[in-house]
Image (tube, rainbow, N blue to C red; front, side, top):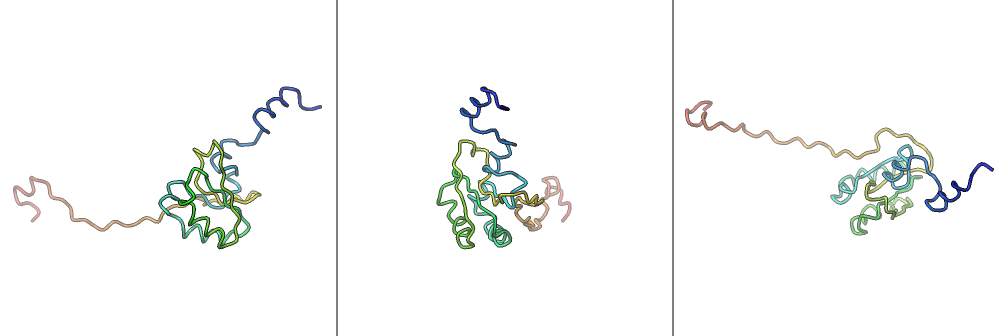
Length: 144
């Protein structure tokens, strides 16, 4: 008998022990090594990454989408529609530990170890602005 009475009691009160519990909370019950794409809750609220999410769904048709239940159904609606459109199954994960979790995780049930799973918005180049002159330059008419 490998388990003692304390192990049975602990498992009965807190559930079965899991590997990497902090990582599982962050990835909505999955692991980093299984993730193919991740969006934060703020990115979902702002509808950033919607087009990239659709591309990832096409690229990973056997994956499963995990949504964070802390987001409203209205907020998740465009992402859910895309998952349904591409025949990807999804789950809305509602656990107490979701407060620190991501908003959306496209995941597999096995390790895929992809390097670039996080959405990074393309950088927008700001237009060149004329350099402001100091009040001394204006007073003495420098740089005219």
